[in-house]
Length: 168
View 1 (spheres, rainbow, N blue to C red):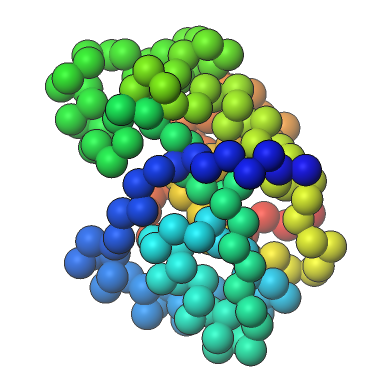
View 2 (cartoon, rainbow, N blue to C red):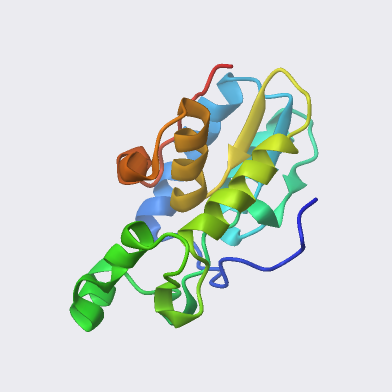
């Protein structure tokens, strides 16, 4: 069972570009007719999950274990800002998955993987489950479901405003 720890601390809203993507994404995701809609509870995911669930007459489920990785002092910073401030320190997320904590107090890659592995195991037994989440958890989910390795994790990251369909 999930421990209840809060992960990604920044409840950052959507940019104007992100807000503009929502109507089309709602249409696309609703067309898939999920049986259940799960989201991380953060504003960015609620903005998509709630209208999709409403159109399908479902109650969205908030599961914080689908929140983004906790980045410690880096929380809310862009990758470019982190790189400018720390050089290639962020490589530690791949080079030292068990020990490197982004922003000194963030979640290790191993912790993120363990959390998402558990979240996948706890999914409701339904035919179609829509999970509205964030880049890190989505990439880890794709890696785990594909049987991939940590070295391929970066290739599993999808651009903002896109989604993947995984058939089991």
